[in-house]
Length: 596
Image 1 (cartoon, rainbow, N blue to C red):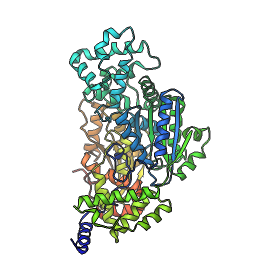
Image 2 (cartoon, rainbow, N blue to C red):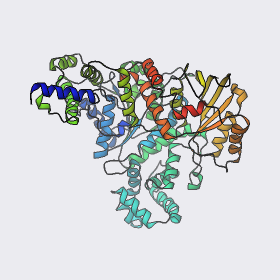
Image 3 (cartoon, rainbow, N blue to C red):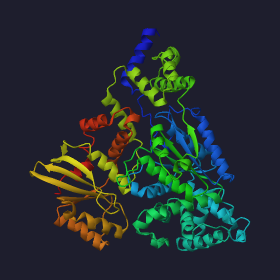
């Protein structure tokens, strides 16, 4: 084949294919749990991996009860990739349990946020298909080995090294009627030789050994701090919403103590510290709020390694805090480094090889690193550019003329495939919908032109936000109060609805409740308030559907991390508006449309 034909084939492939350098160069919350991304190099920032695994060993061997580690570095230097690699190694080798804590929505409930995502992280499975909860439950039962209860529970103890086999054995040997009593006796036996672990907490953990059965789901809801109507039926104590925030650190203490029995340090990773909003009451930045939470965990828990990934400007905010917080959060400090010249070239080659393979081209037919000049790649490396900056430059060069809107749409569509929706986190759902609503002002949908969207307060049961707009069809001002409420607890629902139907407090013209499931008729007070909202006050209940939420989650992620994706926040808003991604969304349309 002639050179002309070779380069013509390359050009055809370039025009018809996705730019291999424009795919998402950001590790998102969802991607942390996924497969290794193509531009990750195991050798990049290997020194940080080693420091963290040294800390895990130190805590496991009880040389240190707790360690705080700050990973510092500019954007695009691979901090989040390190977290991703930690999880992948832990799934294969064990040695600790791992939790990833993404951005929070409500600074008043940050402890509850961490508790929720810590518990949720432990539901992820290792390479053998075993959840981290199952490992901890099996380890608790294994403590009976060598005790006075060994003979009684020998057949269970023998299966502790294989939690799934243990699960199957318990299901086979215990009926639904005897299971609860069996766990009660088992907990009592375990606690004969263990101190500091709460009876109800350990009982809930044993239910999690059963993985996906209904009782395990109820137990998980209790540990997460979610409302669930059947918690009491499972024999677990109910806590009011006001107490849940206070109970969150206690729950983390319990988790760390249980993990210590299994000689498994708890690795808690905080990422994207600057993604949320400032606390209006205290004036603290998002990073400072997270630092306070990390400090509380550090002071009250043992057997824990607390990692936070921060850019330099963010660390300066934490450094200004008093009471020894910076010393604990950054007890040990490591810096993420940009790739070396050799690593830079390897990163580019990985992407090019992917492009060649997808288009059935032979890389050996082309000059090294074609269509780039190796000297230019080396020049970028010499300027200590991060991997993200490198990918942005390569995408520009590869495409020659960048259509930013096309690039935005590609990244948005790629992100849609990996979205995880926090269906039980009201505040997070509200933050996602609020973000999309703020991108519609001066535009409209369903005859309503939005003028402004305002958050209401951080109060637990209050409205999440209010939409100010103009109804072009009925020629009148509208003021729509919105509340997301996914609770399965009737009392919590009553409290929310009492505030939503109080139109006078905020001068509402319409109230809007957003919920994914029907309101049970057995909730007499709550159901009556819902009927009042719909039939007497012209309000509505909008059904929350995952497929409608996915685009809004993607919009929020790209907007909050706009710099990481190569856009300004104003560009993201404009693209969302031009493409109708928010205004044409079915959930947004339902919220804005007047009830029929």
